[in-house]
Amino acid sequence: MPHNALPLVVVPGMLCDARLWSDVVFPEGHPVHHLQLTKPDIGALAEDLLSAVSGPCVVVGLSLGAIVAFEALRRAPERIAGLCVMSTNAGAPRPGQFAAWRAMDGLIADGRFADVVEQTLPGMFPVPRPSGEEAQRYREMAHAVGPAAARAQLAAQATRADAVGALRTARCPAVVLSGARDALCPPDFHRVIARAVPGAGLREVRGAGHLLPWQRPSAVSAALRDLLTRTQQGTPPPEPRTAAHLAPPAA
Image 1 (cartoon, rainbow, N blue to C red):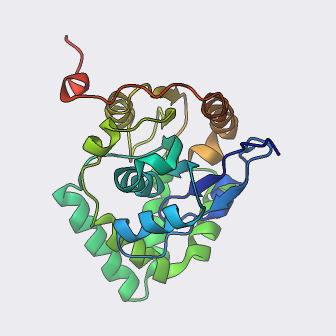
Image 2 (image 1 turned 180 degrees about the vertical axis):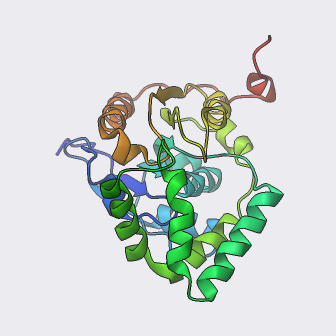
């Protein structure tokens, strides 16, 4: 292990666990810590992330996991030495999302967790009807997460806040990955994130949907290698972004 090898804290999305990353090749020599999302509050989950290791770390997050990473960055920017986020949204929840989360929570409370899994399944993939093998892989992971954790994750989603302000102050190497065919978190969401984070690299992955680590593990692995190289080289921190940096490009 390199003398200064930074640990990675890896955070999955809703209804996902460590098996989401099973096809990804993590950079050799860096300890990898997988976080589980089992608390009903983004702040509490961010504290879990920061408590997973001592000292600086590189955070890798997908979807809700990336939202947790944004909050950790807000609370302790000096602890985040590198940031890789994907399939996510830095904006505050929209009214329709609150209604959808309440409806899903009601179904789970009524013992219909399997229905919720089936409702979420199409949005995970770049095509409306994934192959039977892909769908079953997702079902098995979601059911392993279980209804109790799912309800906590739905509650946590409702405690989200707009994270763009926190992202402007980032002073670490960062990469933003977006599936070109992600219906839940389309590329425009990731352009906002990349514009906010100083010096962030944006990679749009062709043909991929929401579950990038399964659908394009080689792209995720390559992004992590590049990020760790930049982090270990001690790339000088970029200047924090101002509001002017976030303006959309002129037509």
